[in-house]
Image (cartoon, rainbow, N blue to C red; front, side, top):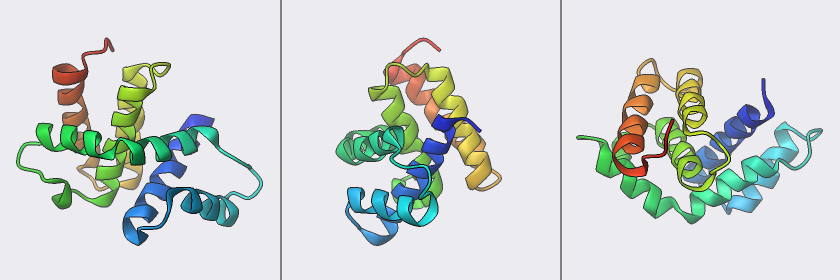
Length: 138
């Protein structure tokens, strides 16, 4: 498994924990790293994702809600919601990552950690946002 994929998975775990506990983002990063990956050290990409999602969460959530027909954020599973947030942060703020890679990684995360429908759900919303709002070439 690639380093960035592991970073995305770790960021998903941290964002999930933050929603469940309301904990400080930096503290959650440290706590999860110490308890689950002590040998790997600091993960700058995961940290960038978590802090970026938290900083731009209102903008990201507005985009998700605006393009998810009949789905308010509160109705989405925590996993799907946070995968969408990670992907949108990457699409909006990580120009070095091709949009196609971001979309594929988000769909794979949904299939791995979400429900049977997560991959299609995530793909539908991200595809709509990518095509109608962001418009970066795939």
